[in-house]
Image (cartoon, rainbow, N blue to C red):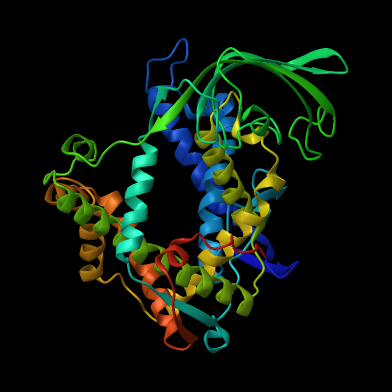
Length: 436
């Protein structure tokens, strides 16, 4: 088999392959013999059809089938021989496939970039540390109470945080517009659900009162037909209800599945959850800084095939997350290209760090991570056992642990600055990393 390779770009290869005619004919004859054993031809018993008849009837189909199999097999042999690492399936251009002659074709494909990860010492990381103070715990208990708020009818004027039941009709230039009217809508004042001025305009209103609000839609309003326009809303307040926070009672604790349904037991469980969230938040921020540093220090070209596959994966995820009657391929690729490129490049870099440093998942850390996740459930032992019975889930945890080991490897040479901060600052989401 003859193979020649041309580098048409940094990653694209144009490989010409010639398969000897003898091999081609051997493959064609093999298929014809298989066909002869099962072919049904009028006037002949199965298995007794002369090869000349079989060849006359089935040789073209056998030759096409042999072509596909030979291309697949010879391409694999050629990339192994040439020590190439294709990133995706090749585009095949047949050049010659005549009876009695060599099979010749051109395969065009991209290869994975070859590079060495460097620049660990150029990466700067700010490592946060924080504790869950009693005040943080108290604030969290108030958040949980507010999440379980109930509303009771109030015979007074409405104020912020009250829930109003309203009917409203919106008009632009005297005409009712689509989506601008509703009946029996529940609205919490101060929630920011409505356009600026709407909720503020209902503060002080009482049940049975009608108010007319003259408002302007924001310039960046999602409905471009309404953006920047002035509208008149006629609002009828049907009822006013005030918020009532639940007391910290056994009944309240039971909603969270707390075994020890006491205030002390509840505080202990909430603190555990906050500490778990704190550890994860700090770990995530460190990881993001390391990954940003690796990206900046190691610019590499991305194979188009890998980028396209990642875009398609993100499209599917978007449809699954947001639903709707839409097919993934209907979503514009450009919506996902930056995110896809970042993920592909990081995947290549992380894989190379693993290879260069001969890293393998630390099974002790794998168990620790599973136990950490399981601790959030009522029966943690069952959760741990479930992970170790499901290879796919277990391997996903191993991948996360391996990524953490990559981060640790980088931190050994990076410039790390420790900083003590409050719990709130530590768990506050970091800004989304910029895509390259």
